[in-house]
Image 1 (cartoon, rainbow, N blue to C red):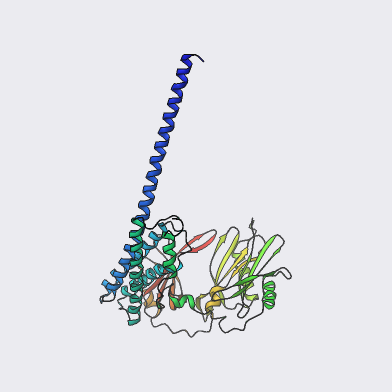
Image 2 (cartoon, rainbow, N blue to C red):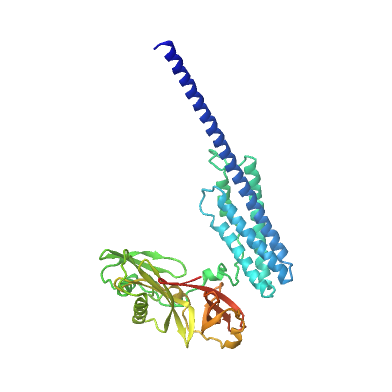
Length: 439
């Protein structure tokens, strides 16, 4: 190799080395920036979590002494906002520990309880002694959590705690949050008209509470009769919770069949047949008729369909029980019909088993005409019915159901309380070839 070629080669080597060094410096800088951003995000999330918990405690403390509905609504809105902010901050922390069930449940319930208070304040009502006690309980828990997280935030910022393993004996944020979760303070049950009220999760299903327990063998026979697959199903475990059930599964003609039967009373809770690649050969209206006939054949009386929708060739129909013309929406059954051959491929009766019972319904305190006057003047009423609807706290309210259409063609269901005439709920109906969706 002559001297000129050696010089050119040396130049290329030096240039390549310079480029490599440049890339290394660039990537090192980017890595440092990433680590700084990550550290800033963790620090901010810890600080925000501590601050939000402190704000929840402070707002609830103020709520104890608020007397006007307007002030109470404002304070409750602040609690709800801070509870949501705390949940977001918690999700931003790189925690690898077990799910923080107690912490997450507390934040969710604090927000839900605050939303309940907002609704109550909007109606001009004041809190009862029990509801004030509930705020006291939540405030105490929020303050204790805020103090604990504030200490962790300070220690993490000082490097005493690490987000990654610190070796034997080292303390990590993960470990400290696990300890907080295990030592999470207990607080009294909160009973209120909201979906996260403790009485909702603990309530006993109406149709299985006092029903005699059936054996797994009897439940299997019931499952195979209901699904129309004798000799196919086998025991597949049990489901716990407030409605314990036996689970059965099996395969037939290329389809997987799954059925749940309650231990109490032997009622079919769920049934599912896997059905893919459905080519519709019938109208959804025909499927509704088949679903109704299926329910009648299996002892479900006085059922009325409310709406249906299509899911990949499966028409799913919602049915509710009726009592002397009153629609009982809590007593809900869902039936899925395959549009290729009309076979029942889905069934779900949790709402029905949870709520169905003999009821004594009060007579409306206001007339239909008086309730209709509460509607927006832009709504044209197409039909009216009396309906029992579920409330957020697992209660029930008798209402006038008005099917309406607005000036722009939007169809809505408006529910006016039969005791007061005031609007209680409004649902928008979205209709298409695939059925009707309600939101």
